[in-house]
Length: 462
Image (cartoon, rainbow, N blue to C red; front, side, top):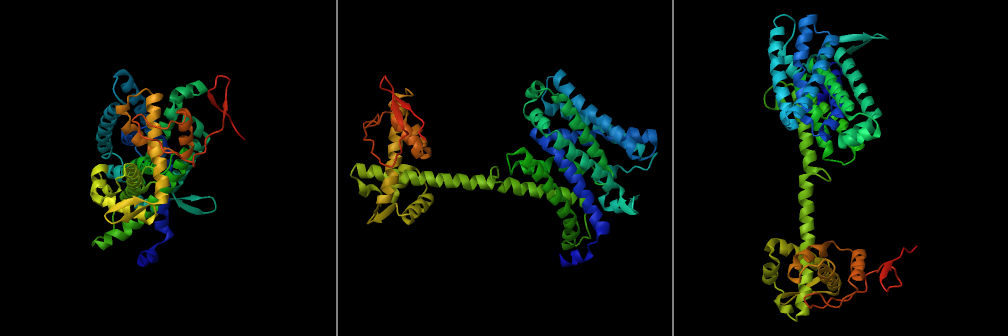
């Protein structure tokens, strides 16, 4: 790494990274709304389907001038979005199928035309698909003040400013039209117009990236950073910012790894644009694993902790019932495992944790509740039996169908809900099965008034 840093220079490495960052950020900021609208494939379709527009521009102008390229790509990009909507409406097919028809047809037509155009003008089909971001520093323009900057960097900077400005100015409209197009029309602006404007910018961004970074990277950046940000947050504004940060980090690390990783395997280097896309994919993998809300690793451990807590509740509740029946000696590891249908490993962990918390103790061959554990068990059993009474008296369920439901509800009943449940059931002394409902002094009952009919009515207390 030190050797790599010693070889690093702003020209060319800095300009390569700058072009990658600008392409990634300008793509990701629009890609958020493609992801939210479940139209990620439309970004892919447009970036491929603009090839006929590029080829037509080359045939007409016989040059790679940016203006004909933009015009051709924008026209075809809008047509792609229009044809997709038209086929979906007329053919009564889902959006994925309509995008697939338009995407494959226009892309195949574009490849044929690009190969034909390559015989007449200076056009490399591989450059269109894979880009040549490493050559970005070679094509520079002179700005006022005798400052020389790569042409691609200037172009991508303008595109990034336009895209960020568009999202900033029309964030409310984009949000409403993405989540509720009917509401957008009611509010007073056209969701369809916002859709086509977004698709136009997607097409412009794609074509601006073709010559410098290629199709592969821009497709990845339209989808992967927004999808990764979606795994990390549920707020749209935060998602947009995170997607831009993830895209920029992928661009930087992509160039570094393109230079650093191949020598470890005996190669000189690899494609920077490809490594940027790979790094974006790795960042998405990390977000999908460790995202605070949607990461599957975090969800796994959260579910395990919930299962652990529920099992600990079940253990102290069962020990309480053993005490009720005067059968404390039955609370052995084997009987607990059999009754609770729990594997011995999980049960042993729970029992050890409850002992460490001082809620149970082991005497001779059986487990028993301590005073602290008995308090917790009392609340759980009381909650369970009050729920059973409520389900019979208020919900009208039969007594033989309520145990499983009450078993689930008891684990998620806090003191406030338990107090309200006590009021609704009018403080019964037994449950529908005739078991005694244990008393408690820890419930803070909501203040109530008694109306003229003698019924309890809740009153707000300051």
